[in-house]
Image 1: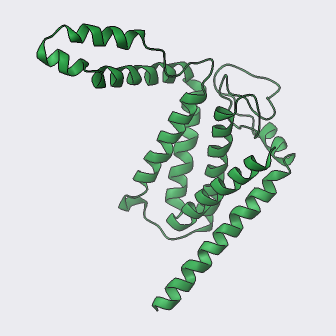
Image 2: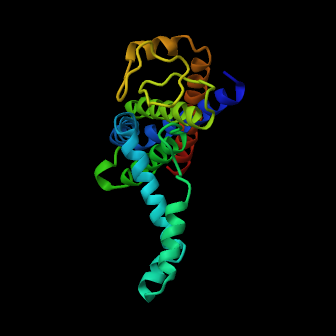
Length: 220
């Protein structure tokens, strides 16, 4: 695993860890749950998700290509816009789901962030939020690296998404959901970079906590 990937893993895990610690356990559960849910959607309903994303993409192209305006005006331009939409290349494909994974996971993270701003999820800093944040950061990093750097197999993936490469492919791949916890844990144990990334993440968290403590002390 390259140094750039280690730095990326450490930074992302630190960011999610700090976020989870500051926002509390409820937000940590929400963020981790949204990310895992997005990955399960891609694992079980990968083809359906690809079809949905391509449909939304074509609808947006049609709208911004003047199709809605042409329909409202009753002109023949709507037909041209529709033909252009139908002839456009699909945004994502089931054979190479990297782009779909980035979009689905990114959407899940953004939704979890905004939902976490609601009063119902408000909480105090917690160690459980830190742990959940580190887990969320690992999942985001592992799947985005697998999506953006295909065939590299940088980090093991606990949830198998057909067409997405992992660091160590499970021995028994099946279509749909494959969640090999034992295999994943063994792969993690073989990663020498993971303790470094976790140590850097916790160090960043400690630094932020001390800074917050010093600021609150000065205010008091």
